Amino acid sequence: MDKKTKRNIAIALVFLVVLLIEPFWRPMMAAIQGEDATSGSSPTRESIVCTVGVSVQPALDNIDLMKPESLELLPESGWMLEPVEMTVSEGTTCLEVLQWACQEAKLPVVTSGEPPFVEGIGGLNNGDGGDVSGWTYTLNGEMLMVSAAIQEIQEGDELIYSFVCTWDF
Image 1: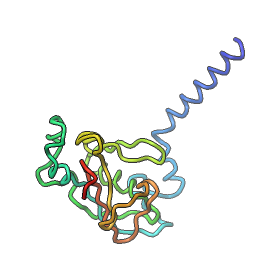
Image 2 (image 1 turned 90 degrees about the vertical axis):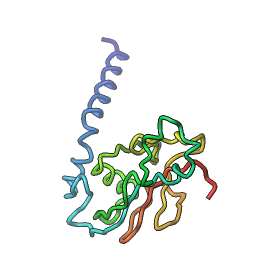
Image 3 (image 1 turned 45 degrees about the vertical axis):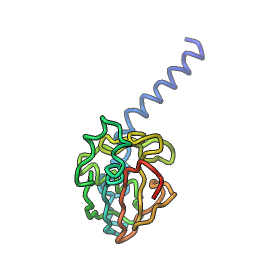
Image 4 (image 1 turned 120 degrees about the horizontal axis):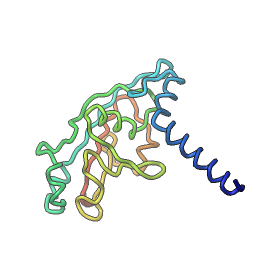
């Protein structure tokens, strides 16, 4: 074998190892840090209580902008996930809170980018309500322009993700 073939095999093996380890990375790190992998609670970090919900009311208010195939994803109540209280560890991000709450509710969350942003929740994806539609979040009623993957949740915070079709509020 020549050097190029050996190098390509080594690169392929590294990618294979990464692909095999990735699904177990979070639980392994949580175990090492003494945390619960699904809730992030840790005996060394203080637990805090927050509220999280997933609203589609803005989409219902702009139903004419929604793609026909997305209409079945919009509950009449306006909530994909009615606000629920969660206990998490201090230092947990808004994105982690969303992911854990949606995991419990069996709502898939799709993210992309770095830092990651929400592309879709429960099958409703950015662009399903027009070119500028997508997921955004408010923290205690204020829309933040900080990535939810960076913004930490605090005791008593109310976190609401909403699917918006326009940015006219």
